[in-house]
Image 1 (cartoon, rainbow, N blue to C red):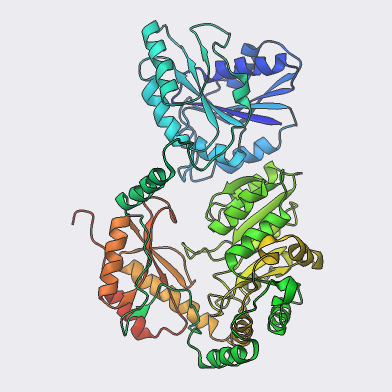
Image 2: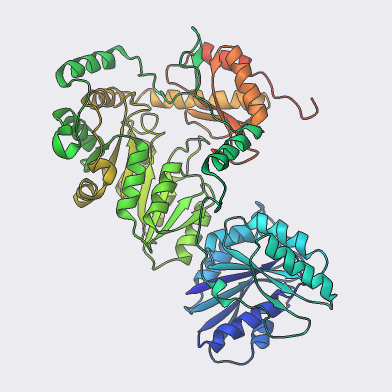
Length: 600
């Protein structure tokens, strides 16, 4: 089935008529066509009107997903009361429609009209349903150039094109100017409709096929010049990265690393490392399929195997390698991946390299997730989430996600990198804490954060999954394996963590109290009890300034800026440790002070 979304720069620009004309085009090709009005406001019967414009045909049907009483915006008080989300209802109704070959969905109003109390608009709807093409109808008059350029930028990477519709007679010189401007700006113009005509002019039906995606624009400029321009842009927007000073001043409190349990300098782990170094040497010196897999690695696997309820386990060189590799191995082209909007770059990379179709749901929004699962019921679906999110320090309701598995068929990939050690009766992570380990198909944990070593591990629901990675994962097969010393240190760290059950609630309570103090002082803070505490500063410049202020006061904190986080959401990232004392928390509070008001 091909899906097309018809939207516009504003209301009353002829979306319904355009919908009918396109439906007529596909019906003439013998396709089974659905005309769908997403939201009908005021009893306008747009779906039926579009069907009438298409002409009588047995291959065409009209449907309306939601109806509101007044001819006003969907969120106008007379149409919508309270905070009930609209987007999940739309997706649910869409998923209940019968099958067809061509589905043409008309929006209500312009593309940026809010349809949910949280501010979601038709662009969010498009991201949820992933239409093959979004067709933007623009009134062919003075102003069409400006409107088109604004929407072209707003829609960004969503596959889209434009259709100029002459709703009122316009001078030929204006229409010619519009066409020339769209061409110069490389804004794809699929067709034009002249005043009161029903035939598409300059129609390019091949543009209704999915457009290829690319991350970089094609250019004939010298490579060095092009790349240096990108670096210069980073500098101009305070997003240029530099390696930090390799040494911290004496007495500086490090809140920028991920040593959540303070085991990095643990004497017992250091002695374990020294002993392993003498026994195994400095390197594994080979791929795990040659001689790189040692007794140290096998012992670590056995330890994790028992830690996670006797599940098959595999060790990797890094968390990035683990995430990227397992997604490439288990997800096939043509599969559907539904992922949280804020998943880690390693997960995104693995999904994109798999060739599967990716749809992202709103961060931690289980209702939105379920609506997508319902909409795409019957497809092979993979769900990709994290537990504790690395830049926001919050986490989803894993039990609610696990409950969805009893209603919808999907494979669940869960990244627990930032939860291991901090959550769970034995420190195995948030899935253990919430009692859902058995529902997770593949779980990734890291050895380089709470476990104070290096590398990562995956835990599989079935043996064949482990064997698939050993046989198919290029990073596992063709890389020199993790040093045995790192494996021995990680195994010893697990033994320590499993004995800290009584202490974990105390660490989380300290994290809650610390956040409460920050909020009391006026800071915008995300999360509740995780060791990752983001303090939202807004601009990159403000974040860098506050980071430097903290450093001058003896605190090393992370300054996180776009593109790692969204534009306008730059932040300090504080990583708490189980070893922090009340005096340390007080020191942090005093160093941060209070946020400056906007008029300072």
